Image (cartoon, rainbow, N blue to C red; front, side, top):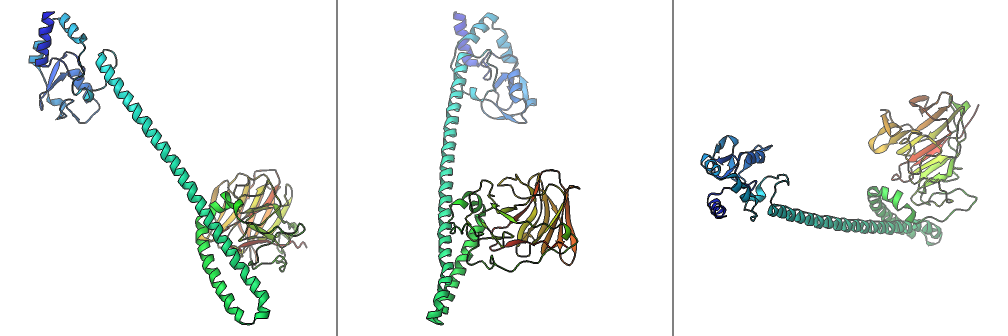
Length: 437
């Protein structure tokens, strides 16, 4: 026992233990830069996979070619009997300085102090991670609350502007009734009101361009509706609309396809509330107000409308006047198209689409776009050949010009359908009446 004690004192002076494995040195080597010694196996494993690595004790840089055998230390260790080595290696000692820099070794052969130190580190890491997770979740909740508040504030401002715009637009109508009695002085007041109206409209348009999706999908139901029309009348547009439900009829169909011309009308159950139907349900127009229709579970949540008539056999043709809109899509769709599915973006819908801001005409099916590189058609003819399973779109001017032909892959009835760009106020599409010969 006295020999062991003396050997432990000698070990404290000569550093007989490797700082990496905390055992007596096995094949000790010395780093030529700083002079510290380690087991050859420990230092090679520590350096494995690293281009550069510092000394585990003093953090000085070293290269593997600078390792030198520590023959003096090896000779001294060879004098210690094997029994004494085993006793020394089983003694419990406090963790030496620098152990945290050592490599991670397997748990087999670890001393209790080392295991306890490792457990403390894991516990601290777990605690820090939980704190960080709680902080991230708290910040996420705060962010969601902030976004919701901003959305509510923006919606409130929109409603205020719309109310103000509605009031101002109603004033010219009231003034026109009084003008007969108040003379020409009333004209000055009317001009002032129109100027105010233009300023407000400009501000509203800027705001609406940024929040179109918010208005159409998330908050459309909260906007103030117009008064419901009489049950025997068609929904009408606002007083400021330049079109009238009793307007003159559009030119009838007169082309090589007139023998297949169909009398199609728009379905009030399948029209978005931002769109108004006029002219015996043959014209659809972007309205500045929500239009009140009878409740329908099939009503579109985006600015689309579908016709009442569907076709499953034969040949069918109709024409649509597109010159009064700078953003539209004309096509056909399966009856069960989703309320939020845009025309041409599904498997069972096909269309041609014009986007005025891009000056671009495209054909759409299954969310795949085909650029057509043609000018804007002022009138579009649609020819549906169900025997051949094709639908063709034509630009109608002095003569028909083919724009695009789709092969259709469904035997279910197909319905004429249309989409309008809602930021273009009073933009409209009109279905021409048939004129069979």
